[in-house]
Length: 215
Image (cartoon, rainbow, N blue to C red):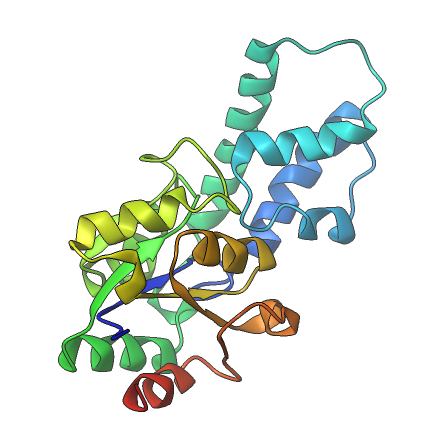
C-alpha cells in the first residue's frame, strides 16, 4: 500500500526534551518525598501527563490524594516544564531534521505531528517548526495515551488520509504499538530500534528519504 503521509512523534524524534521532563517531574517527586530516577523517567516517554503522574505515585507513601490534588500536581509539573522549554531555540533542531522534513514535502508527502504532549505547538514555535507540518494532533485533541492509536488516527483524519497510507515515526515502543494498532506502518528510531515490531529501523532521521524512495 502506497505511503502518502508521514506522522512524527515529537520528543525523541524531532526534538529532545527528555531532560526537561525529568527535571520537572523530579522537582515534584522531591517535594513529595518520592524516589524518582532516570530509569523511572524512561517509563514516562510517550505517556500522558496524568498517566505519568500515576507512575510516579506508585512509590508515594503519604495520605490518599484527591483527583483535584493530582490535577494540581500535574499542572505544577507543566509549569516547571514550560519554564524550561522557554530556553529552547531553533538551534535545538538539527539541520538533518529540517532538511528531511522539507524534502518530504517537496516530494509530495503530507506530514503531521502525532504527540501526546499538550505543549507540542509551544515547542514547535520555540524551535521554528510550526509551519513544517501540515497538521498537528496532540494532547489537546485526544483522550487516550499511546499505545492507544488515537493520536495517530486523529493525525491521519486531519490529513485526510487512510491509516494504511500513513507511516508513523517513533522512538518509543508504546508509539510503535500505537501505530500498528492504528493500521499504519511504523519506522523506529532511537531507543525504539530494538523493537522488533517496527516495519523499518532508522539509523538516522534522513534514512526516511531512502525508505520512501524505495516504496
